[in-house]
Length: 270
Image (cartoon, rainbow, N blue to C red; front, side, top):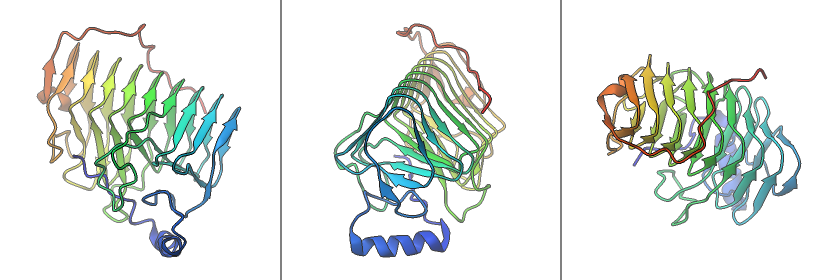
């Protein structure tokens, strides 16, 4: 099981927020955002998050259009709430998005218990320079694209970027994030996957394992090089080809593609 550590190092502001919120017992689970923020739920056309907000356990957040996490903002949906986005999700520079929840996550506090949420994104998820994202057990009907971001390849604060147990109908492209730990584990991608230039401080980082990739898998320029680490993962199942650092840990399978044909990855201007 991947080490999904809490963002323990978001400095003194985070420590103070944890202390204050313990007394109030108001937090939805492990603290993701730099401060507790406010709860958000209900129905929206388009929605932009500009501060620190979270989806409380047992509540629903439905966005019929696009959901935007603005520059430096944070949305914590690592809870037993439900999030459904009809359009696409946009994550800005230095922003944080936590979306989805599944049992067995190694946080200080376990918010998911024995339940897996099924948050959905009708379009694609685009992130440009995010501080980090926690993506777990979500369905993305388009592509997942994340370019750049992170606090830098440092051990303090300890910042993770986990992508786990996802269903991605298009392609996944993750490049240029610099932080402490990155992992791409137990996902099913109907298109292709590219993991490139991830620079991480933890020698156990860049775990890419137990994925099913219907088309191609390409990994290059990552430091440390892509590995199983201590994830206990199995080789990735790949339908077409595997290149670069991912070439060592694959099983080529005759995977029957069950979608309508994923579109090529495109990164729109933002």
